[in-house]
Length: 304
Image 1 (cartoon, rainbow, N blue to C red):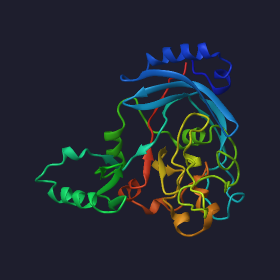
Image 2: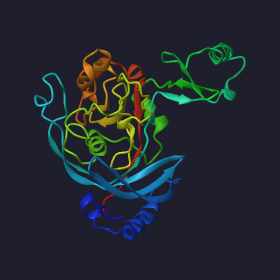
Image 3: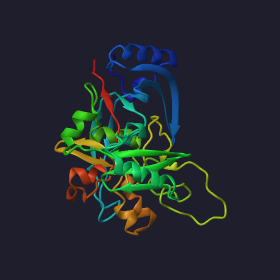
């Protein structure tokens, strides 16, 4: 497949793009299926691209580009840490549209063993008749309600990042690195956030409650698909797992440190800035960090 950059990709007709996606399908890991062409638009950016599916997860084709990333720290906040300003060449890739929890996985209740899991089964029955909407035992299990059903999530048992990768990343898949993630998250914009340089207080944001007599039923603004068709948590309490030269880091949040610390909406949501780096992440071990991590798989495409 010809490795189109974004500018070249946008010169193709819809039929030419679709033909290219059919050609690409023959080069992908086994299990991918073609779905459709779709146009995504957000924050004055737009992209018509192909959508695939793999194990019930949608993936989109993202053309490559040469982009300027990063941010000068003093212009943002005196104590904010940002990735440095740099030029990066990002190769084309297939990207999972929706991130999933890295540290939690759903287990059907029928898979519990009546003897080995007797205590947990008892907790589930107590929760079933309790008024709570959710219950979490740190780094053990979490119970949530889905209508009249109880959903069980267990905490991941991996002891290291390397061990986690072996279990979660099949052959041919990887995680985005920091350059790739900033490109995907910002969709090519140079503003502090994907939507601009300031928090728009008219947006509906998680953990921010506005006094109003009218119930806000709008979707959370930062969770809507961006111009690449990708969805992000848009939640400072969560981070997305990305690769670094030394291993990994979390992007898009700070575990809720600023927001929980009562620093207000603008500083509280600063960790959702494209270039933000959590200055305190090194204080956490893998298990502690895993609790707030989400991840998405990518397939890097061969150039030429």
